[in-house]
Image (tube, rainbow, N blue to C red; front, side, top):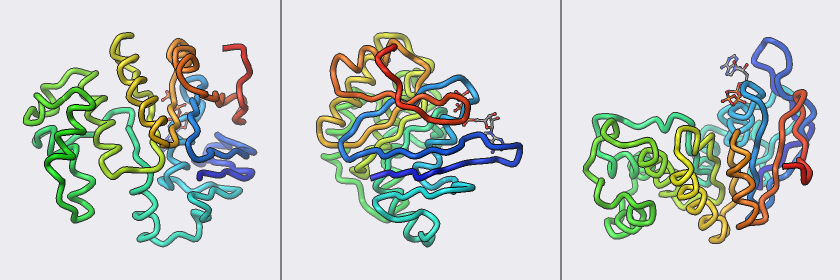
Length: 223
Ligand SMILES: Nc1ncnc2c1ncn2[C@@H]1O[C@H](COP(=O)(O)OP(=O)(O)OP(=O)(O)O)[C@@H](O)[C@H]1O
């Protein structure tokens, strides 16, 4: 689904990520962990072709990202839902409009019942008309998750989705991600939160990727 072969990435100041070879199989659940600045967000950007590798090969759905046209990239991105670290809402538009933006951008009409079901699933049905600045951190993260899944993507990438949340809200978000994985979605979550990873491992066969010394290794049982 997402395959890296000997990938490196360099913003210009020396190699940040090197010799990365791994596969995210369909239906898998991975965490990505590592120190601040290690390159977690950069790795996620490589996973949705926001960045192209400076060496090696990244294939999304069996296609080398270097061979993708702009249209191909747009099409591929519809299959990958991203929960960004800072959520990135349009503050002057109500929550429901923000959540349906990916549909609007693709010239598709939101189905009202689907939207209601989705907002109910993330526990935000009563806040459909609220403006993003009035939402709590947990509400924003759940809205960002709703927006990431509105196109029914095959893959969901989440960048520190529980970064500013209390434990109860972190667990709530984790439960939503686990539910998505049980529906067959491939999940990759970048996080510093080892407690969250431990909690997830009790619920789902999650694997842990760790960035260390520019490489990504599969972490052992030492978590
Ligand atoms: N556009 C950019 N241009 C140059 N350097 C960048 C750019 N984006 C990120 N970096 C640098 O690359 C390194 C890795 O950044 P990245 O955001 O991928 O790390 P991270 O592991 O996600 O960090 P955090 O856990 O703090 O979010 C950092 O040193 C960062 O300053």
